[in-house]
Image (cartoon, rainbow over all chains, first blue to last red; front, side, top):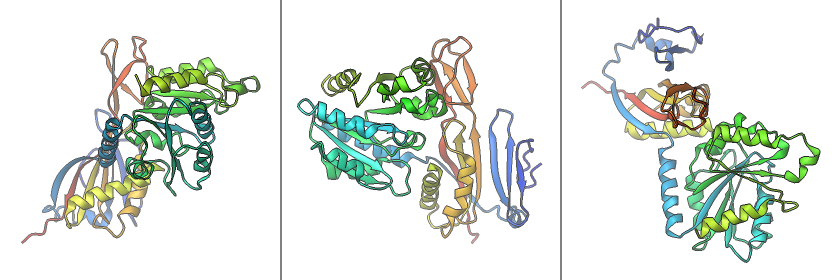
Length: 267
Length: 113
């Protein structure tokens, strides 16, 4: 039994370091796991500190981000801008798909881009080469974009009314899934060189996305990639996910993606 | 890796609500499906708290198990990942609990007059 709070100790994990502090995990009847630390020198004073005041906060840790994201969403809605949050692991082909899409739809759609990377403006330079409006956000050690970065990016970018804003998130299949940017849809991009089980390995990002784009399908002849199984995995994690299969090199499958974009902007 | 930024958020929110009083204890609620590792939060907590009024506070984490409801038959069951198959065979499930990431409460030092 825990001497501080009287809770029963389960058999899970217990690490004690008398010099520093005491990590302590126990499981309640309903499966809830409680982990806490006790500073040993403080244990003796625990009851003397009973004048401490407990404040109920009930505050979402990501509440501020969610609020800013909601503001961004309103901003997009008021300007009839379709904002898409493009997420993938590094090297899945986000930038290549974007440059091809921008070039192919030049006469039909106004597209602007917010580029997210830890370092360099390389991707923004590539996008700029297409003649479209682009801002680069470098997150430094940060592993994802958040709603406040997008808010600042929008001030710089000022995308036109009725346009499409592509937000290319930092290459990462984990963290971007947690941060709402105010986008209309999350788009997860998976290249066929990555293996068909990515949707079940990184379920959060696939579950939170409305769209999945399978890229580099021109490489099928050189790979042992089971496309049906990949789609099954994606549907298992997210039965509603809409899937496109494309090659930004040969152009195969891009028509459907373009149709989707054109329809989404002017339904 | 996102746990560092999230812990910084936690310290900021707690500090703001403490209104200058020394924080003794922080209670978090973290769902098991939230993609947040409690161990990583613990690791970051003391480091992020250094030099703030949260320094030295005890961190408690309530881990909330994942529960889902089947959209087809309405059955409610435990899940250990953010997707799953109901006994009726349906993949259409709605996550009920397990995605929490919340600061539940905190304890501050109240000086006796």
